Image (cartoon, rainbow, N blue to C red):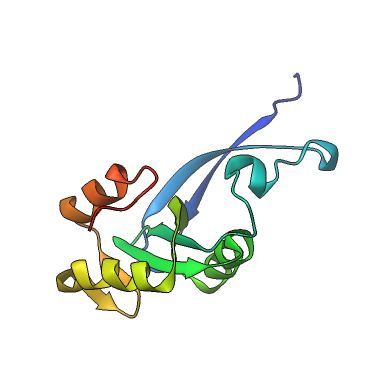
Length: 130
């Protein structure tokens, strides 16, 4: 049988117990995809990020190093996480977004996934309308 470069495996989220089936390409170290290739963002910029969790929550946060922040979040979370979007910002803008969606706040910077929040995230291009 020929070598198959794609492995299909099932993963279960420890937080919400959902089962996910993902295709993961087996990459050699020379061909490893770097985070910056998937998310080409300058590390020197302050970014507001939106991270979606498999338990139905979205984190709205701010960082100067999105690669390291996302790694830390994935390591600490019992649920599967995906980076939805990043946009240049500052603490004042992040605070305004938190206030706008305060009715969806579950704890800390985690907000309940809703059509309003998802539409807002989709509408972001360069500037965030608040």
